[in-house]
Image 1 (cartoon, rainbow, N blue to C red):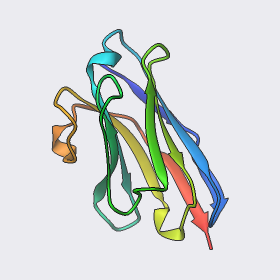
Image 2 (cartoon, one colour):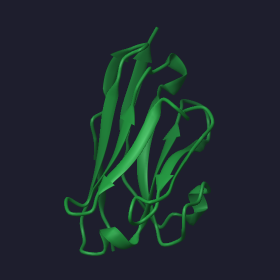
Image 3 (cartoon, helix red, strand yellow):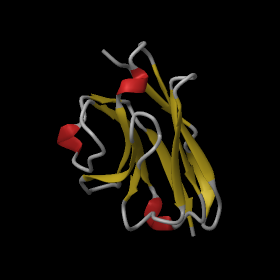
Length: 123
């Protein structure tokens, strides 16, 4: 069992930056692929980025490639999402998730989810 708690969301102007954190409980954090998803108002939850268990492999949605960076610190049981050059279309609730599969983009492949942290980007 893994419990996930996101933090770091907030209100930022377009062009600004935020860093989201996701703290995990449990001793098996390092065995999970970790992902970030987001859900904008009225839209489905969508893949943002994921990182393999050892950080050796990452994957990004096209919409955030080059602006967002996912990383993890297994010693701290934490995964991060550095978001730069934010745009109004990045406004959403951001969720972290843990998967026992390899790097995947499908939300159905993730076993555990956090409660989400809201990011609002003003124009």
